[in-house]
Length: 222
Image (tube, rainbow, N blue to C red; front, side, top):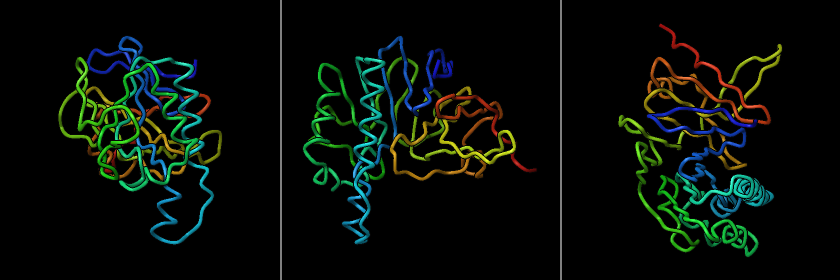
């Protein structure tokens, strides 16, 4: 079993080791912060040439999740593109991969702070989506029942005498923050005051990877 089950506001969710969130009862797959085209954006804006493999790898991993879970609906929680010009940098194989995944299913691009939500990659664009007790948007607000992204949370801890850093889901009784799904993305440490301030006293993290694990968030210093 490569997921941890999370019960959020009455919804039974599966936090997968890949960083994808699955809601089996709704046939829904959710991913956040793909940041497709990041290397192209860096080359375009800064002139620094990086191998453009991150988009290919991100889409390949997403195709694997889609094939395995076969969702009826996919929601991308914003920052799917690294900026609003990155669509032009996607090559034919990238667009073909997206089209294959969209075939026969409902696909929604939520607007992020890096992108206004793609308008020419198929699917539909939205600011937010409500399904049952849950609201899907890019950046967290104080509302109950939110599933969001944006912060790229990462857990840093010691396991078996070694320092480990992993992208992670953050969850409490009110809401969940997803890890960045994109291959070439940084992360915000779970100990930062801002992230800890967003989460309740019952908050915990689900570490991604081949063997996802659930751990409590570190206590904030007094």
